[in-house]
Image (cartoon, rainbow, N blue to C red; front, side, top):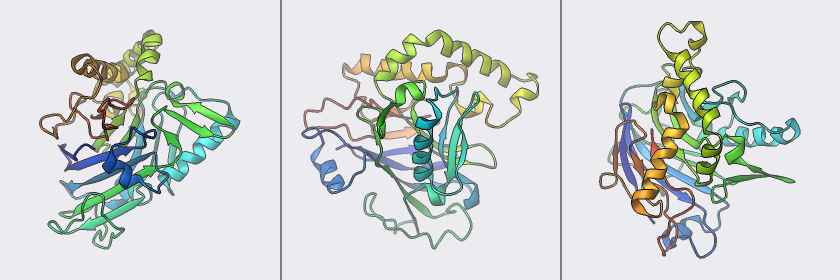
Length: 307
């Protein structure tokens, strides 16, 4: 199992470790022990400090996309939306239509576990218990935040989600956009951190639809340009704000993943800069996820990228 990856952005400094459920025989022994008896398909353990005071009510976790989702029929979509509601808890902010859909919820309900500790007294990354008594109305201040996110429904090995009697192909539904693991300041639009989970099957989808995707990215960049008019004024419609890659969008991220595959020969990039991530661009990609089995072949999801 990989070690926690340290990272730092303009607004947050911490470490992260992500476990994915693997098929029998492929799970690393340490990860298998942590996941034993649990139904979790993913377990994100994140710990760190916010660099500036942010009101707790303004901290949002969720996913923000840079182009439309390819939505199924309503009778299939409704259970998927219910899954999102369970994932992010109360106060769900949902926008599935339009050019820049997003789904977000307050940190206090979106995280399955939240622990606020005095520096030096923080728990081990996978040993935290619920305890938010030190929050007192801010986003952690000088305290150390430990948060868990886990999900039982989304199979990251196949990138499909069971919505009985259907199995949704999430690569197609999300138009080959990655699953986001993000924390955002709602008041300013700043991301404290933003990780993405990609799957190899996205590469074929992006290649097949690259002309449509590139055309949409170019339109979004034009709307976000200075003097483009009121159409770019909505905070969720600013492509440059939502994705630092700007007009390159998902293709830029996918090319980064392809470069990792080409350079490593198997798509398992290993930790960047000795396990540390610094900055806020898609250039920094880390094997924060459990890389899988003892054979070290790596999972189908190649990397988590800090963007």
